[in-house]
Image 1 (spheres, rainbow over the protein chains, first blue to last red):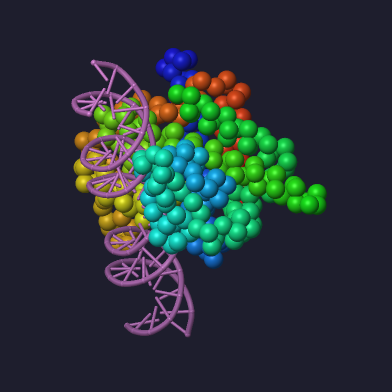
Image 2 (image 1 turned 120 degrees about the vertical axis):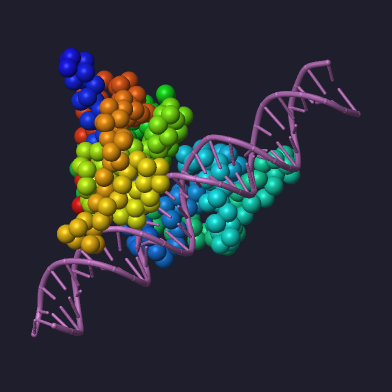
Length: 153
Length: 153
DNA sequence: GCAATATACGTCGTATGCGACGTATCGTAT
DNA sequence: ATACGATACGTCGCATACGACGTATATTGC
């Protein structure tokens, strides 16, 4: 085995470990939501979509998907379910018949704007609270950098 | 607005940004797999499971799920599909009728052992290759720490 | 020895999550 | 004006992904 091979193997092990960690992170982030914020009956992605729609009423589906880093088909499905619950509204753009604009339902706008900041104190924020300030910044930077590296490919 | 409120808000923003980054990371990691490693016809989780099964033939389903950070029901489904393709085998433990042990199919054992290291050079490893060595370690550490913080809750 | 409990899995219902495909609409070049 | 490509969505098929529930098998308590 050459020196280069060992290097490659070491990087592979690092990557494999990071993959395991990232799966575990995803798992840990999704889990408590079901129980902790059960009152709101919103899953993590639904929460993210609601936040975005409240922040930008009338957002196009495509931009919504990009904002939450989801394929438009996935975003469409989430909007479907939120619409079925009456928390959101789809309206075709009068100036461009192709785009459907997403609005928060009038009834929930105020409620969501108030409740969301409190509700979004999910497992991630709880975990971050346990870290030192420097650690928090470091992890945020690392995650951002990793995203950057992955997306520039 | 008190000083504590601002602090909480800042942490919320940090958490929200990290959530976006983590979604984007997940998305970027899953995507090229479909095309790049299309020959192997294996998805990311299937790859992770194959790796684990080849590394530990006869592993119990529960331990398999834990190793890849997935619920046992999810692991069961993945094993179902791999079994249907003949890449894996389920055998009930003769000493304990409850456990089903997972074995790599005899035909693929050698092949997988050789092919996997090359195939697992997925988007993450590509991205990591673009980073400086120090950055790599830093990101790995940060991700590991984040996992630790999330799981200790 | 047997009832109560615990464990390991399989299965189901639901929610993501994606690419591929079809459709309606818009912009544009002829 | 009309054909043609581009764009935005909706929908489908499939693969995760989870908790809840049921079932079969061990283990424990008495």
